[in-house]
Length: 253
Ligand SMILES: NC(=O)c1ccc[n+]([C@@H]2O[C@H](COP(=O)([O-])OP(=O)(O)OC[C@H]3O[C@@H](n4cnc5c(N)ncnc54)[C@H](O)[C@@H]3O)[C@@H](O)[C@H]2O)c1
Image 1 (cartoon, protein in one colour):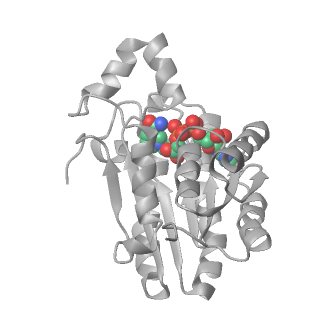
Image 2 (cartoon, protein in one colour):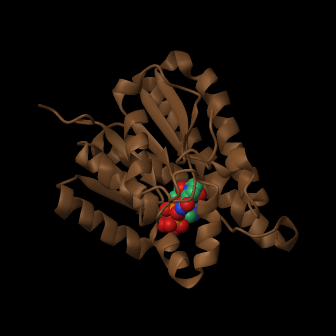
């Protein structure tokens, strides 16, 4: 029997490590061919080699800053050049500079928006015409549950991720009749290598993040990847314009 994403071509951004790598691994297990992209050229090389050896995936990669229009264009075009089509775009590249709003500098504010919003805007902008031409596409963004619960020190990050949530609903409506669905997965704290390090170096901070989660633990990266995998599949054909939290109950509804 064919795997769920057999013959699908997926671009996963920010796939050198963390949740992005877990998503790339999950989509590879589901049978997708992958274009992976990241700022971190060395990490990307290691990720590509892991995806090929562990999962037998066909992988192409593109290193660079996806907040730059030309890099986003190159990354999206690579799907067609390497594999002939583009079915899935997972806009995962991002990450917070978590600090009180008043302690941000002009640079950290700009980087927060570049990293979390411009990456999504440019990659989506280049992906949509290709998906429209095929009359099929799945765009899955990584948002944040902190937009919903207004987590402390997250104002600037939430401004960027709130932009992603807003882009989701607007794009979903605009392209609903083109066979393209656009959804966002919004995690709470996730047990990434970074979170594991915080748990060791600052257990009180880690406990503070977990204190808002009724299940009493961070999400596992695979739990986030599982939701992405569903939304990226043909099976999720009537789900669009949704922000779906994977959050152990930290916000409800
Ligand atoms: N970790 C969490 O608890 C958590 C919670 C909610 C949402 N998220 C979101 O999930 C996504 C993944 O988070 P993570 O914890 O794995 O992050 P991470 O920092 O471990 O990995 C993010 C990857 O994206 C890449 N990246 C960042 N900016 C880029 C750019 N401009 N161009 C290309 N690549 C870029 C980085 O190099 C890195 O490899 C992010 O969008 C993050 O905001 C994470």
